Amino acid sequence: MCVWSDRTEVNFIEAAAAGASNAIALVANIAANLMAFWALLQFVNSTLTWFGQRVGVERLTYQVL
Image (cartoon, rainbow, N blue to C red; front, side, top):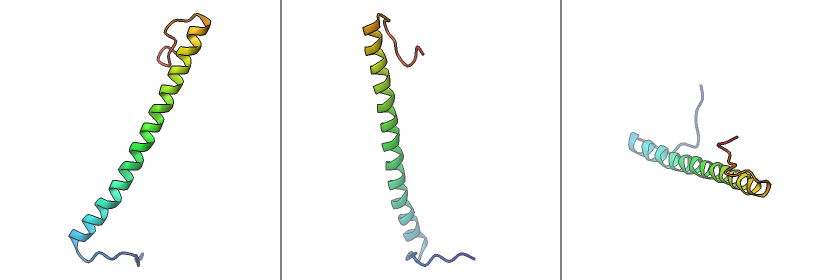
């Protein structure tokens, strides 16, 4: 049997509020990771486009590869 000693909630409302507070941090973390991943993909796409223009390949993008 597992007993959590750091819980201070005494009723359903407090437990739901604590869970919602924890969920907000989780959702913010997921959103930050998605934005970072999207920015990395945009960087790769822009780099490929730049490189394609230098070697004479028009519209070289990540989608083409």
